[in-house]
Length: 359
Image 1 (cartoon, rainbow, N blue to C red):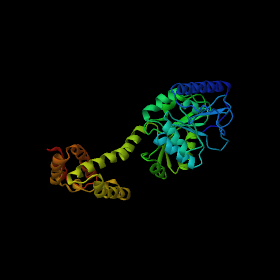
Image 2: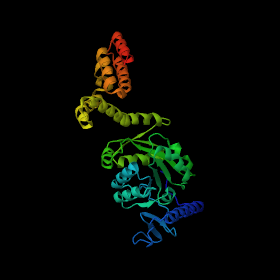
Image 3: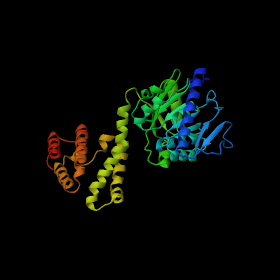
Image 4: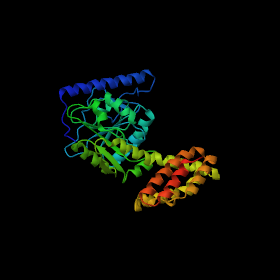
């Protein structure tokens, strides 16, 4: 990331305008009856700085725009305090990364973020956070990245990144100004639970994008939280993300299908997972050690068309919603078996006929 130079006069005017807009937001909260801490300045926050509930703003703008010293990590703020933003904030803070601000319109999420990262300043609006940091992280849903970027204006020397697995750095173009940088930082981790996500970050792949200078800082950030940075080629993000969705949501969909089929045996979810999840885990371990083709087992490797036909009949009777999933996966199994030379042409044709037949 480029040196964090002092702002020019025009940039200071832009900063002051945004602070005024932030003040209007707080006034609106007050008008709606939300407690804005009528006691005024809170001891220990600093001169001219007021906290409203869990929020802060500077009444006379005495705090300067943040600047790290040469060689130091950039002062960082996170927009979005949901599962991804919270996990990144906690992980970075524990790693000694200077996380100084968070912005979220959800008061519960702001409060939870501050519980885990007490040193941060909390804001409702993202633009108020921009004045406190050098690196802005947008940890928001994919569809919110571009609209949010349109509301932000960076200063020279600042950088902005998002955590989307789908979007490229170009989605942040509306926020850019002269001398700013944009990138992306996507941990390949499931953020369903904070503690599990924090543990999973260690050794996780983290896809990064940006120019050479910014990427160096993002790689440092990835390694600081225990991840392994991987720089994606331009235009590769959609394919990367599709594979990621199959790796997470796709596996969950498969497990849900297994649960549905196993219910015909009288098994609940716990029972189904207790029986079949070890086989899933063994298959994954085999694929890791032996490779995907060699890990394939089952009727597709043996040409057992009669077995496939029996499966289809059983699913039609007990779990009809699982039929299209079974057909699609067995067709892919057949492609793998054919690629590794496990089947004769005749066996391949019998399996295709069985898969295409009724039910």
